[in-house]
Amino acid sequence: MFLPENIDLAHSEEYNLSIRLAPNGFSFCIHSSNDPSVFHHQGTPLGNRLSRTDHIKKMIFDLGFFSQPFKKTSVTVVSPHYTLVPEAYYDRKKVKELFQFNLHQPDGTLLTDHFHEGAYHIIYNLEEELHAFLSRNLWNPVFQHHTGTLLRLFHTRRDPEGKKSCFADFHDQEVTIICFADDRLLSANTFPAVNIHDTTFYLASVWEKLGLNQSADRLLLSGELSGQKETVEILRKLIRNVEQVEIDPPVEVKEEILLQLPTDTLATLCE
View (cartoon, rainbow, N blue to C red):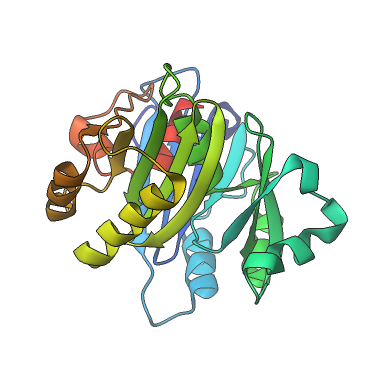
C-alpha cells in the first residue's frame, strides 16, 4: 500500500486511525493531531461478490496494519438506523427497548454514542459479526455514529442570535437533517437523497413540522453538493437564507482531496 513518506507505521502510536463504515463503502484516514502534514485517505466501494462483513474483513487482512497500536482508533458507522434518546429517559439496561421504540428489528449489536452538549444518547446497530471482528482486530477502537459526529460539529455552527438552524448534510445517497433552536436540539433524521423531489419533500416536511420560518431561519448545506445542484436550486427558491458549511480541518492536503471527503470525516479531523 502506498503511504506518504512522512507516515512511518513503525511509529503508528503517533498517528490517529479513523475508519468509516458506509452502507456501500469502506474508507480510512491516517492523520496526526500534532502534525498537519501527516495525512492519508483511502476508500473503496463494497462489491456484490462478498458480503459487507467479509469484504471489510478482506480489506483489513490485505492491508495488514489495522491491528497496530495507533494513538486513537475510531470507527464511524454510517447508517439511517438510529434513534436519539434524551439523557433523562436513557437507561443502559433498556437500550434494546429504546431502540425498538422507533426501529422494530434490532438486528446486530446495539451501540451508543453520546452527544454531550445536548445530553442525548444515539442508539444504533452494527452487524454482530462485523462488530466482534473489529473489536478483536483493532487497537482499542472507539465506535461512533455519523450523526453524533455531525451533531458535535453543527452544534458549534448554530445561530448565535438564537434563530433556528437546519443543517442538511448529503452523503452516501442520503441526507442527514439536524435542526437546532439556539442551544436546543429539535430533531435529527436521515432520509434517502436519490430523487430530487423526494429530497426536497423531506426537507420541506421537517421545516413545516418544526415551524421553521422560510424568511428568517437558516438552512446550512454540506457534503456531496456537486451532485445535488438541482436540489439546491429548488431549496434556494423556497428558503431565503441558504448557506454552505465551511470546514477547515488542520491538515495540509490539496483542496480537491478535501472536497471529496464526507462531512463526518472532516469533522473527525477537526476533533
